[in-house]
Length: 184
Image (cartoon, rainbow, N blue to C red):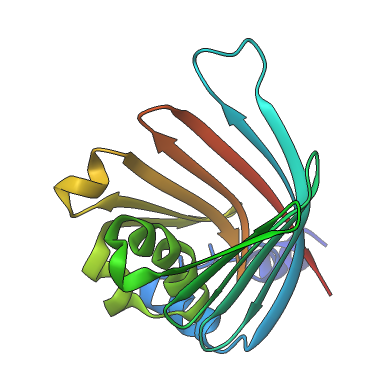
């Protein structure tokens, strides 16, 4: 009986899973052509006692369409498609060409290039640090541009597989934390 247990022991002890590389995660993300999620967000501003909450939905459609629809506390829709950012709030609509706003483009590309699995594009705006473990992966983006780093110190994304589960943005004026719940 003991001998049989000893023979089975190697099969019972699982070899540790190999950690994924950033390149592997990005290839997996690139294969996702469309996704939807709900989000909750808190923006902590030093001047306020409590963080500002928000909630809504996110959607992604390859190659470059990203939408953040905030439903609470105030309805707002941010849509990026190609080089255009459209902001709709309280019946007002504003369009912005990302080529005319390099800092906004860099912020958009932090998310969009990650979702697209476009590592060269992501690295054109950010230095990347990546780790993977049993709980999922972690990607920390540090702006390469001095102009952007004057506004954003870092963006940290946590994910599992081909899903981003949270995004934390460290800004000069506070911290924004977004928790993301991918939808089937």
